[in-house]
Length: 256
Ligand code: ZN
Ligand code: FE
Image 1 (cartoon, protein in one colour):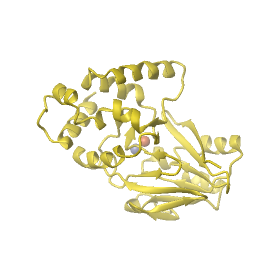
Image 2 (cartoon, protein in one colour):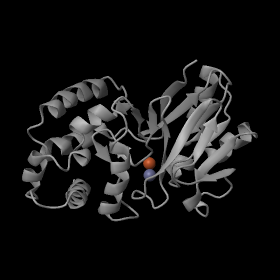
Image 3 (cartoon, protein in one colour):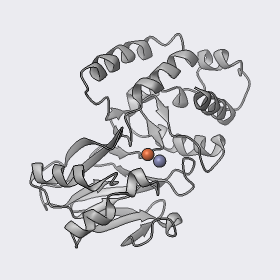
Image 4 (cartoon, protein in one colour):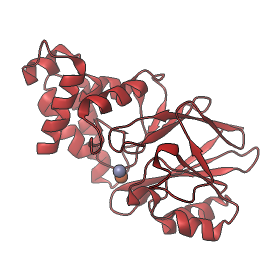
């Protein structure tokens, strides 16, 4: 039976996601922004928590871990090895290339330094799903808090080549703000304008704009379009390196 995914809102604009393997009953929470909504989602689905897959150490991603463990003492908490000191008490620390098993589901670890130095994402190739944390967002990417934009570029490029039908789950609902910025730097992109109309309609109804997918991101996310002549022309960076164009985009987005 195919894996099942359930996404729900947490805190202000975070998303929680449960990944469930019906054949074994194994269920992973990707990050734990806060315990309450994760526990409620588990109850609603009738699923038992077996794993927490942590992407990075920010409190809006690990704040609920202790309370989840109190409710599910057998839970396996998986966290980036590079952040052993900042995410103490995990059961398993993982590195790029490691494979985490959640029942019959396989999650491959990809290191994506940038937003934080230890940030990792989880790719489930068989389920065509990517849990991107705060590295890649719909039409945007995370802030490069702990590495230069050029390093975050290398991280985002690792994800850019994933199959187009990969469902991308993101840590936050930042799509409207990202899309408005995208339209400024990629003004002649009809696919982007069409997507923004859809996104605005979803948000007007209070609905989620994620998960997204890699095909859509490659067509509309300026951070994946740093080699597009139109984007480069808008920035006046026709001859710059891809990493420098990316870093400039990140800087401009920071300034609003
Ligand atoms: Zn974060
Ligand atoms: Fe976050």
